[in-house]
Image 1 (spheres, helix red, strand yellow):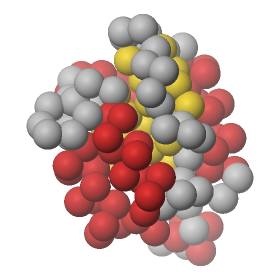
Image 2: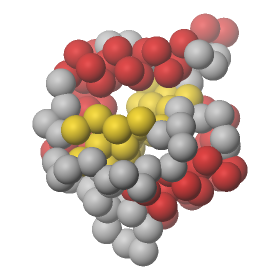
Image 3: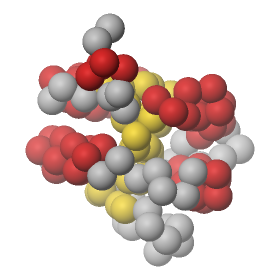
Image 4: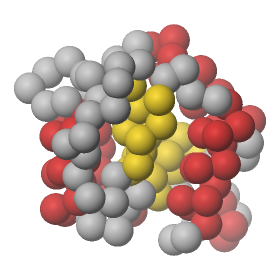
Length: 125
């Protein structure tokens, strides 16, 4: 792996719907971005503890299985990694309880909007 590859940061996709998660990953990978996939907030936090240096942005559904939802995940990320960009998504109306600095992208999200948001977030690192 070359130096440019080693410095790349991945988008951590947190989505319980496997088809949608894989679709988002394919889209971002087609846009030459690296991805890491998780199906729950708990798995995402565990991944961050192990591979946090590899992650440049989190893209998570608000409704997730387990004890934590996407909003809980975003709050925890804000505490531990305050400058890491987080975008939450949902097919339900926006929740006004989003943590400060967390963006919202409604489902169904536009493919180009997701790609642009990810590239902008990763360029700021």
